[in-house]
Length: 253
Image (cartoon, rainbow, N blue to C red; front, side, top):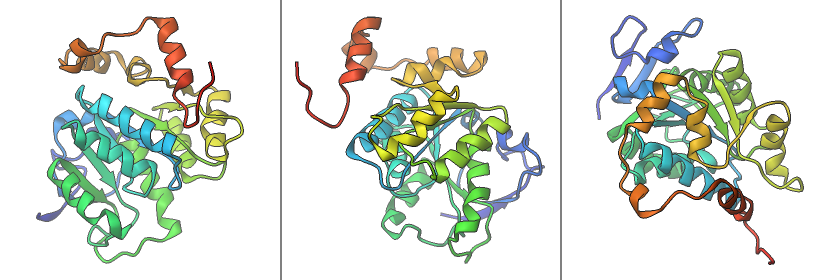
């Protein structure tokens, strides 16, 4: 797929990213379309637990099925699960890299990157040939936050780069949301801390949509989803119980 660059004066430059201070030139494979302004970023640990992978993939699929573009960073773990969830639902997804667009990183996601470019876009501010370096990822995380109306942190340690993305989202005036986890889990320390500091607690896709600006909430509500008729919505108390039971260990009743 053809590689090209886009700048802020180009019509196809992402509108949300154009609104941030000093938006960068982007190298891109695939297409950014007007509908991608309805976007949510899902980020988290590279060492995600089975629970984190399941939640990230399921949440991404639920949102993508309703017309929300899923933004993530193509890293191992939560990012990979989020991209796969969006693609499985037949939705759009955007991957933001911390390296050159021609650099396969991580190498096992080469095929996934090609699939994303065919159903969204792979983009970066770094020129071709740029190796993935730790100092590149804060800039990559700023683009991630800038492309989305809100950022959902699924799993993250207290020193995770996902928390940098959440902080940047807050500084940009975007929504910060988090998936709760066990207090004994190291990978839940990050999102649990965000929730304690005021981030929106997410139990399902509806919690995410409720935090979006009004025009976008209406846009999501207007998208018909076939599974809505097949799986009746649970009452509030039942939904809460279900959310409490969705952990990666046996439950005793």
